[in-house]
Amino acid sequence: MAEQNAPEYPPALELEKELTRKERQIEYLQTELRRYHNLMEELKQGMRPIGTVEEVKGDTALVRLSGGQAFQVSIPPEVRDKVTTTKSRKPRRSSTKT
Image 1 (cartoon, rainbow, N blue to C red):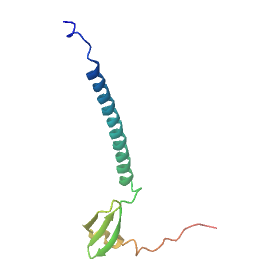
Image 2 (image 1 turned 90 degrees about the vertical axis):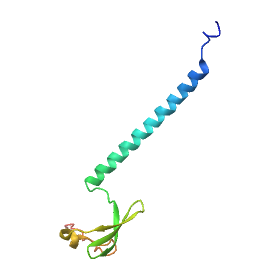
Image 3 (image 1 turned 180 degrees about the vertical axis):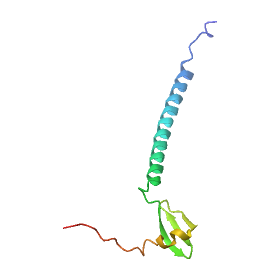
Image 4 (image 1 turned 120 degrees about the vertical axis):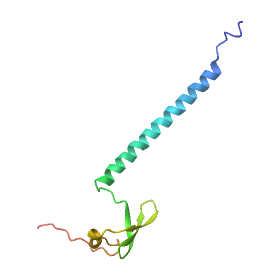
């Protein structure tokens, strides 16, 4: 009977280690989630470019995202005149007054 009442320390230690690992994983995922939420807010507010227009043909454009993926997208007629490739953009003049 004494064997039945013996404390089970090794399984408890393993469970504690696994709990610690899971807590660290949760902290990491929460940090990543906050980072992605911040990035999404920046994109919504137009604070961060998401890619570049590489080529424009008619009402379609080849857009390369910052991650490297490229997509062919349709350009709505009302913004067609505003879409240019990054190579064909004219430098803006600064409006500093002296």
